[in-house]
Amino acid sequence: MIQVGITGGIGSGKTTVCLLFQTLGIPIYDADAAAKRLMTKDPELKKQITVMFGEEAYVDAELNRVLISKLVFGNKHLLDQLNNLVHPAVAQDTEKWIIGQKAPYVIKEAALLIESGSYNKLDKLIVISAPEELRIQRVMDRNQITRAEVQARIQNQLPEAKKLEMADYIILNDGENTLLPQVLTIHRALLKLAATS
Image (cartoon, rainbow, N blue to C red; front, side, top):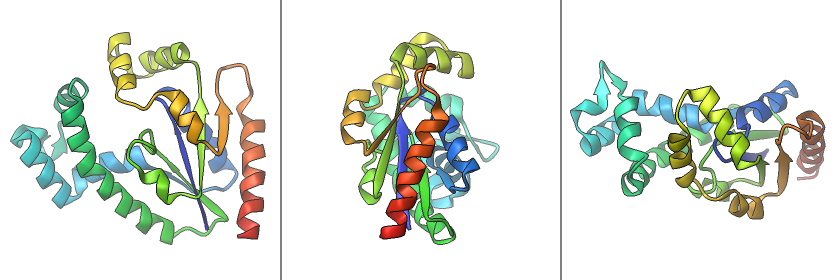
C-alpha cells in the first residue's frame, strides 16, 4: 500500500483537499486530530506532558489547550520539546491505523509532516500552496484570532518554499485554481503507482 503525505502551511487548505480525496474513497489519517486525541487519552503521553507543564496542563482530565498554546507558541524551545513527545506517539498510532486500511493508497495529513521528519516514512508527498496573505486571512476568520497570533504560528512552521522543494505533487489553493481537477490528476497518478508497486 502506497503511503502519501499531505502538508502545507497553516491556512493552506489541507482539510478541504483531504475531503476531496476522501470522497474518492481514500482513507485519511488526520495527524493533528490524532495528536489532540492522544494528548488527552494516552496515559504515558499525559504523564510526560504533566511533567513538562505541571498539573495545570490538564483540567478535568482534558488538555488545557489555552494554557499550552500560550506557553508554546511564543517559545520555540518549549514547542520543540512538546513535539518531541507527541510526534512519536502519533507515528505509532499511524502505523496501527494503516494496518486496518484496504485501499490502493492512504493519506496522512499533518501540518508538521516535514518538520517532524515523519515524511521520511512516506512514499510520496503532496504540498498545498497558498499565498501567505490568503492563509493569514483564512486562519483569522476560522479561529477568530489576531493577525499577530497567526503570524506567530507561521513562524513555527517551515517556510512554504522549503516544503515545495520536497514535494512530489503540488496543489495550488489560491482561490483561482480549481482544486478538484488537481486532486483527480494526483489521484490517477497514485492509483497507477499503486497498481505497479
